[in-house]
Image 1 (tube, helix red, strand yellow):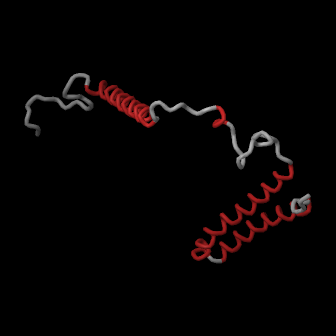
Image 2 (tube, rainbow, N blue to C red):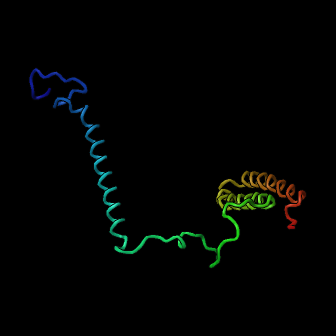
Length: 141
């Protein structure tokens, strides 16, 4: 029995009026104040890090440089379609190697089942490589 006589225990009742409704707003306000304080500190540090009296970035410093010379083509130029097929082939080999390393760990625990799964995986990749070979991906012209 509680020490207070006649007190009714009501679930969700608070000792102070409005405590439950104000808490999320206070938390949000405090979070906003902390965020604004940190953003202000970041801006102040950025201003302090800039040397005083030195000019900003000049126009020649903004141009891209390729080995000390002006680039001959734009950075967003189109690439020949043969590079895409080589990229897909490279990704196929990379995926094969990415799955081979953890497979070595699984092989110890699973045994023959792991060998069968890796055999199917390598067969599918081999079909892709044979198809690319037939289409002439390996002939560089």
